[in-house]
Image (tube, rainbow, N blue to C red; front, top):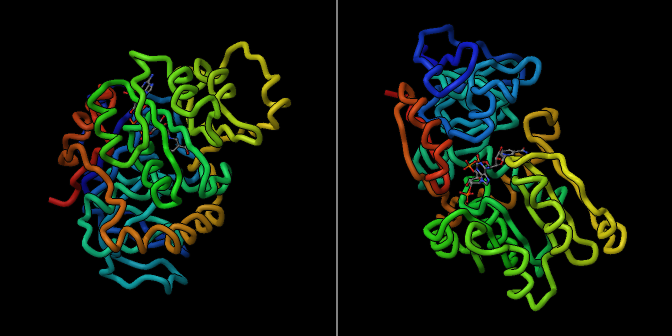
Length: 327
Ligand SMILES: NC(=O)c1ccc[n+]([C@@H]2O[C@H](COP(=O)([O-])OP(=O)(O)OC[C@H]3O[C@@H](n4cnc5c(N)ncnc54)[C@H](OP(=O)(O)O)[C@@H]3O)[C@@H](O)[C@H]2O)c1
């Protein structure tokens, strides 16, 4: 099969299309003939040598795929050969064939193509686990999402829409702000031209927000705490601007705040299955109705994975970048 090899890692150009062996599905796994693979920021980190794959995972990049079930591992009864699926995978997505635990796959929502389906798993698993399970986001609350125009950010806007929650986002330019508003955000703040904390205090008459989804880290920590209401929750999913600093932790105690966070990749097969089952029940029926469609900003052939990563690193994209794997 053709696959992307990133060798010892480095700049995007380290990724080369090569020929390698087709992986064999283990018991409980399916082999997927990949049609499209999603590109995610963690792939960029792994390629650069900053996010090694967990033990036992494929060293090939790629955390989500959509395609057709090619073969079944021992004991798999949930899927049939030929079924269209989209799956969260611990690695191996930038390839013509990829194995996945059968219990981490979902059907391709009716009416969606393979590119749209490949754009779903990493963002929806992450957003659900962090905002619903850890963040305990509840109807009637108010949510702040940093990086609102990222793949994760747009999915969080859709989750807020699904739950009936007011969602405020921060973004790095005005066109991203316009896009997020059209996508369903109640307010979008350009953090380069305004202090987001001041703006949110004005927008909410000083009330603040119930939950913050953060990917920026240390420079935002104090302001995030200041915006949280009593019993508020700060959920960290990345530290794009660093994880260390000097902070006043008093608001945590005075407002009974919860600071939490997680990574998706390190979760157990069972933990990811529970998230898959929750998404199948709550979100997949809405996707099938044509609701909550992901936004695909750009598609590249698998051989041009380097161009896909260059685009992601430029930060010019809004939403998802997808690789077309099947030729
Ligand atoms: N914990 C987990 O399980 C998990 C899983 C998946 C993804 N993530 C994290 O979630 C974040 C979003 O992922 P994604 O795949 O949706 O990526 P993405 O589309 O590339 O989004 C990254 C966003 O971060 C914003 N940003 C702010 N400061 C930045 C900086 N210093 N450098 C680069 N971007 C910066 C950019 O928006 P502006 O232009 O508006 O600043 C950009 O939209 C990433 O940090 C990723 O590592 C975490």
